[in-house]
Amino acid sequence: MIGTTLKTTQSESIFAAAQKLMPGGVSSPVRAFKSVGGNPIVFDRVQGAHVWDVDGNQYIDYVGSWGPAICGHAHPEVIKALHGALEKGTSFGAPSLLENVLAEMVIDAVPSVEMVRFVSSGTEACMSVLRLMRAFTGREKIIKFEGCYHGHADMFLVKAGSGVATLGLPDSPGVPKSTASSTLTAPFNNLEAVKALFMENPGEIAGVILEPVVGNAGFIVPDPGFLAGLRELTQEHNALLVFDEVMTGFRIAYGGAQAKFGITPDLTTLGKVIGGGLPVGAYGGRRDIMSMVAPAGPMYQAGTLSGNPLAMTAGIKTLELLRQPGTYEHLDRITKKLTDGLLQIAQETGHAACGGQISGMFGLFFTAGPVHNYDDAKTSDMAKFSRFHRGMLEQGIYLAPSQFEAGFTSLAHTDSDVDRTLAAAREVMAAL
Ligand code: HOZ
Image (cartoon, rainbow, N blue to C red; front, side, top):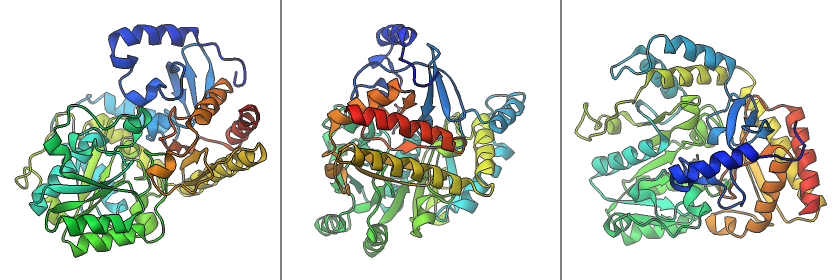
């Protein structure tokens, strides 16, 4: 039951075994709890807004499998659709009608997307879009922002967020200097810095890629005019603007950040929500640019499991559920209640804090703020965040085990879940 003292004997023993089998005992770094201390909780099952660990503890979940679980974990309609799809086979490696259906849904929803290519992860989408940016412009350099994370391809592991920031890694060994030197970086929300990079590298920059709302350095919103400024600058320099909407796509609005802020990039990457909990990524954009992708054009990119029928099915059903009336209103209301409540409790218990939300994506920093970029995010009191994380876990609240990850709610989160979360937060913050 939520709120009881946490017993994690099974988790401890499974994780101890895992550490001998897999680097750090995990399949992806952030989930190892390295930055918050203690060992990770080993999951047994997930349902709705809740997760259960192998010791039988139940938690209210604000990670949502890092974004995909926007309808709630294991939504009955998604599961039912998957059962139907399973009967027809798990992988085709050939065209299917399901790809057309999901492609049409994505094209209808996301303003920049006229054509789309499905891949199997957000990382794959971003590494493919990078090749496309270079192929289309004939230029090699790109601009990314400090603390933004676009997956783990070589070119993006420069001042990257997410696990790289969480583990405090300087970048990553194994990335050739020649590769990293083509990646120019600027602080998020700093148009002047981007302008300067364009001036210093005339005719050499293929484009600018960013998370339009940052989720991998904690939750950071774009300042008014920042996205519009990037749109103007990239057009002025014949460079491409790419929104990495792996986190924000279909989450902060059905049409993503580009619909929410009314700025249309040239290309977009997607992942997480569009796979409904199965491995999917996608990149898409202007027809003239996408026509360069093989076999329509010469830029090569391929994948055995791309367009996988199970993943397409889960994605289609998830988007159908999201299209129902009131969904984004629910996400916005429930998440605002959560973040307003957390900020108020922080104030009442004497902790400097700032944060916010858009729809079902949120963040909280232990600093007075405001947080406009990665350097600001790093002023958050990390030791306090770790104690807060542990305290919440003990209270049955599962938060992202890193200050540098956004939180996510779902259609399954209820007022009662948020009330219980805030009651826990009051207790934990009072004791920090
Ligand atoms: N890239 C995800 C976080 N932004 C994955 C983290 C994980 O699964 O460990």
